[in-house]
Image (cartoon, rainbow over all chains, first blue to last red; front, side):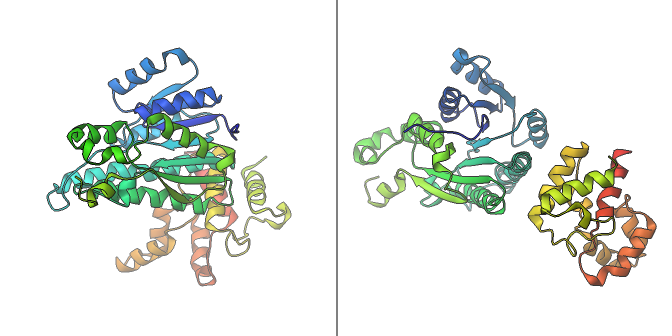
Length: 252
Length: 122
């Protein structure tokens, strides 16, 4: 199936992540120009290193959700129509609910919910200028089946999902759509670290479930950006399985 | 094209109505039936059209009734309090707003024009 896309400019929040980079290559191959965000020097270098054969076909920008002024600067940099936004960025914070430091909780929610609300606002207003656009939020199946310690992560993901869902509802007659994808474990980022830390358990069950590769996940995102998936809006789709299900079976 | 003419054009385009239906004193919500999403689109279009930052809460007088409550609680003159909050509105317009408040949302086309004119020159 050949995918068609209504637009040629994208912003990838969390562009230096393995998934962001895999997606960037697919976007470039589809003649979509991605602006990839990074939040430190290492991230910027990682993007350039991975995309060195695509020089001139992408752009990078600094954006740290913990520094609100960088969000403003990021959007000031976008002087062209914005057709797609893919939000992969999300902070790590694993604590038991009753053991977390209050100020850490405040900061985490501020970075991962309040800052995201501003990102959605700015993106929505940008897309409204052209009466079209597609936002994809990469959530996690942990929102349905969190493990102990994932309460704040799941809460911030769910809150973010709600913001995206409502933006989709509010813009439904304005050509702007939103969708949330909830992948299970991916062999990248947090999922990869989690799986590596539990390698010894692999024979006990993890191998029995489908672990998504970054390529598979990037291709899934690409599909949901395409015109073929235009009918999906203001909704959340779970992809793959979550480890919790195995844990509940008593194997871990 | 002056500010009013341009605003009229933008509003007519968004609400899909004839420009002739829009006068300076026309109420955006009460008369034209503008909804929240229309106002959001209007803010974006005014921002793009006039190259000024649009603060939705201010230009659409969203906190008007809250400000009136605050003035009452603080035993302040309501007209003076509103003038502080909305420096782009003239004293006569604020007085008029207070007069017609009971009739529903008071946002008028002339308020948008005043906002743009004020912040363009600031």
